[in-house]
Image 1 (cartoon, rainbow, N blue to C red):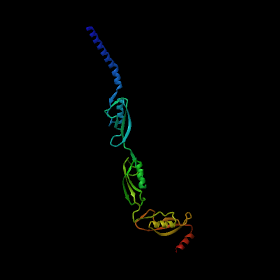
Image 2: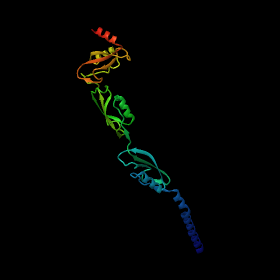
Image 3: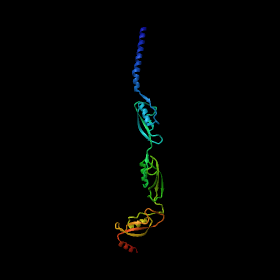
Image 4: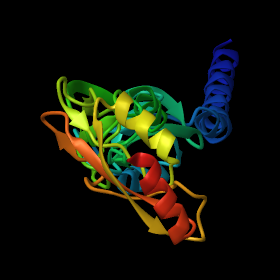
Length: 253
């Protein structure tokens, strides 16, 4: 009886030892290989190059999936990651990274001379906008067109920045602007002077066979000049020959 108990005990011990060795040599290594998860490190605030090196060292892959253009963080810096740090992640997995890049700079377009609406559309297409609009009387620019801008044409600014524009209200009230009369017929020139609230002054004649008779060749005040009061504009008008000049002078007596 004692011998049977002893044999049973020996057999139990040997069986237990075999089970332990089997678990330690075969089952445990397989389990460890199967569950190769590790706690993911925090990559935020590190350069993308350093983050990729650390991921590779731990058996991970890195991939930049998004970019934020900002001046608040150094360019090429990791600002977010997925999965998040502290997560249990299996080796071999790809870790998604979001990095910062320098803000894009926009070349300021030339808006002077454009209509207000056209200028606003041009800015919107570039990711810019209008910050402030001023108005002023300006005889050099048609009413409703941009006469001045800041920042100026060619400057570089950040996307989303607003420009200041000054829009012309045209000719000041009670001012008179001399129109362009060259090339007009004498009658049309008279009409244009009338519409500009100016007066026809002395008309002189000059022989010119290249132009239609009675075409304005010159005027006494430069076109575009702004006057504070109405004035007479003298004209030089073409005529074919000296006989036409004589006849014209006779008719004007």
